[in-house]
Length: 240
Image (cartoon, helix red, strand yellow):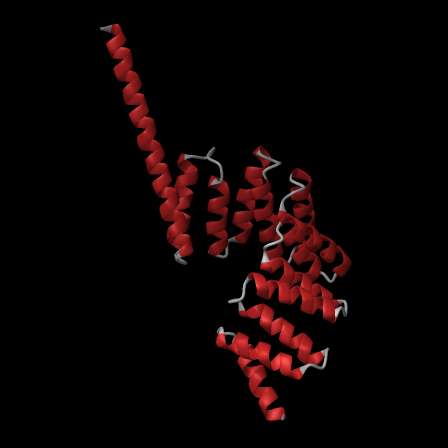
């Protein structure tokens, strides 16, 4: 009889834990769905409740911080991330989220430091190199940005974003042909994304003296729904 009782208690405990886990997962899923749909107020309530119930769950504080940021409450979001980092200083996802929050608050120098910390924690984090490279570009630190984007390209050679950003850095340094090469790689990897066509068209038109190639790229980007390319194509038609 005693063994039977222990087995029943164990079974009830397992059922309780499974039910609690399901409830938590349901909160998280609904909160993230609300966030994806742009319903940040609902997301903040659901993800805040998820954090309250399961403060030790991986990602709980980060998800809530992102919900706060979606409501424009970036200082509160940053406070939540710092609380998480106080307990898990080497959490790369928390560091990346903090860096992005700081960058979004135009505190790019601080963001660069945080992304550097993330890289120290995980030297193979392509996202950390990408984010730091983006901040370096916006700060006008082009050699440093190039170094970061080169590293990101080695870690994620199939990521068109990296080649678009590196192409922009080449452009900022006057390397127009190298910029075209990177934009061409981005087009090969993501042929239905208009931005690389637009960037490459600008190189052809304004810096390499190849208007026919520029027009072809503007035309392609326009067909893919890029309004600036449509405008530039119209301007080129009037110039003839």
